[in-house]
Image (tube, rainbow, N blue to C red; front, side, top):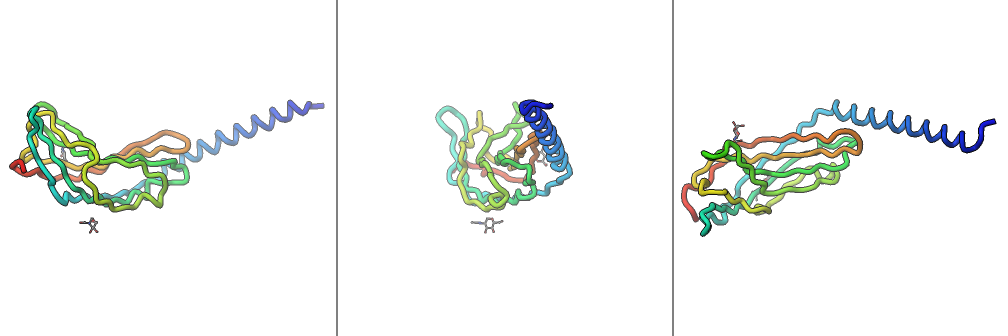
Length: 167
Ligand SMILES: *[C@@H]1O[C@H](CO)[C@@H](O)[C@H](O)[C@H]1NC(C)=O
Ligand SMILES: *[C@@H]1O[C@H](CO)[C@@H](O)[C@H](O)[C@H]1NC(C)=O
């Protein structure tokens, strides 16, 4: 005769095994999903562009960010963290990366959006390198799954340029 406790234990083990199996399937089907996100960003305005008393350049922009990240979402997606970074080269550093805006996208329904915003974080160069500077705007994202590994990717929008003069 099996005791009640034994049967409960067996049931529990079975449940955990099934759960593990479902998790494995979930993260596997995620790897089969090949997302095709898209993003467009316009710099609508350079609100101001100055050299600070400490010698660092700072620019304040108005952006129009339009993105469709819906294909990043599968039934195994918990949320997506996205951030838009200005990326540029200086004599000292081949890659300077400054986050201008970010968001946590909780659902697929929220993953297609257009926002009109000024930079949420300060766009300051540790030096005086921004006049006439060419830069990329890169949308980075981290997909946090309900189960399995997090993954990250990005889309690079090249070819932006800051004004040649402070204003
Ligand atoms: C922002 O971008 C979207 C998509 O490119 C466009 O439809 C919209 O008119 C733009 N908004 C402004 C204020 O330029
Ligand atoms: C900007 O984008 C271009 C084209 O993708 C790339 O060649 C270049 O290295 C990028 N610049 C930086 C600083 O990441």
